[in-house]
Length: 102
Image (cartoon, rainbow, N blue to C red; front, side, top):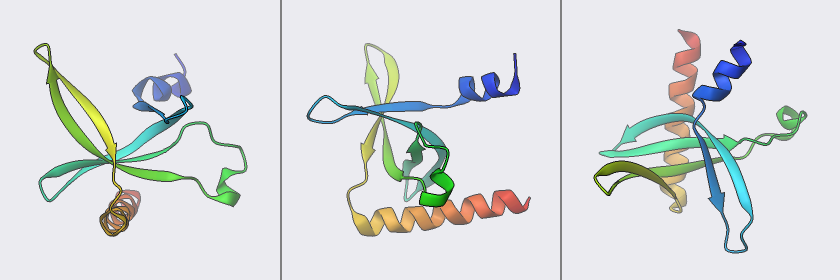
């Protein structure tokens, strides 16, 4: 198995569906806890090759743990509070910069 295949297996891919039935795939970049809640930073999984020039869309979701039929499941809720989302993006950016420096 190649490194690329292993990376794809390890990625958490989340698929959202809008009210029109269109599906959008996102990859979880990182998780973190903030004020007792778990959040995830997601990026588009279907990016164009020139995405570095245009930038890449990121979203922040709250991770909600549910229990269904005795099994624990997770769902992702988009953070709609712009102030909270901005604060979380700043924290994720700081965290990633620190990890890169190590």
